[in-house]
Length: 506
Image (tube, rainbow, N blue to C red):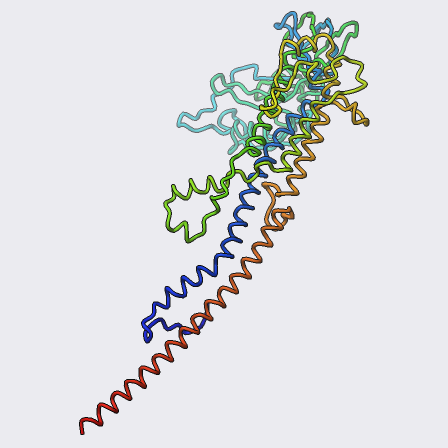
């Protein structure tokens, strides 16, 4: 704020406020143009970043296709799903495998052999251990499981059966406890299966959980013998002529085949190539490619309305919100029209997919040979997938199709098409980042080309503000001086008139 004393038109009768305002509006035109340039750059940056975001999403699709495992999808079918179900990973070789489940994996569950006294005190509450079981003093025992051992101590006069359940479940021993209030039974169960899962009461001075005979002559009626563990069992499986394989769980993997065993029995598992999954992946890739190209082409061909420049603050004051919205839609349209960077990116992506993959030993060495072709020139590189032709290629030479997309090599011409495209998309993302930064970039760390230009414009706008303020102060000083001069002349004129008028009356 200027401290200049401003006197507006009191002596001269001039509308000084309006004169200064209109003068300053004219002087602000160069600054308004700088602000418009800044706004155009910021809009352009948003458009670049939107394209970059689309490319980053597309890159994930390309990454999947450049992995050889995407073309090694397998399907596994069990001859009897009541015995087991199966799925196959990329490492599973096609074929028919005989599998026999000789024993299922199991954990350990021990429960009360008799109905326990009711824990309900009849008033909506729970009896203490003393009230429910007639115990006194403290109840002490040490419980051990696959994940550790812990000693417990409960005051019979205050603790309840639910206190015991909670303490065991919180101990992290690989053992869970539960109390069935309907049937009045207590249970201990291992949280895992297999021979490594066990329940062991190492000490029990109160014979609360266990006893020396292990026949259930303890407070909770559990068949646990103090000092002796009850262990689970492994699944025992024959796979082909390999017998006696052991697994701690009923879900296990052999030779790339994941089996979920349900009961004892013998089955055949048929592993085949999952052509449908490969085709679905390539369809998804083609769709994503077309969507990305459409977004870039839309920006390259967007109409530019050069007569619609960003609005100044003064112009916005004269317009409605709807008018401002429609104006700005046109003002920011076409900012990337025929953009050389986007054209280069688009050209590189199309070249990556249109070239030949050499030295694969397969006739499927171009995209078209595998049933994926490019539409007319007017469609901007859009891809079309012929599922019949692609399916035939996958059945005749699945490895050749895999190499077409995912072949890894140090020689550029031998790289798979998806490998090449992934490199091009990565390069494009980096180029656009250098041009306009990224969505997550903060203004403090954005060193992109547009960020530097915006910063330069900010400095120039600030410098202009300072010059305009000085200019406005200067104008007001001039008009204030004029007001003072005219006021002084008016005062002198009035004095002279008074003098001459006074002399004539004597």
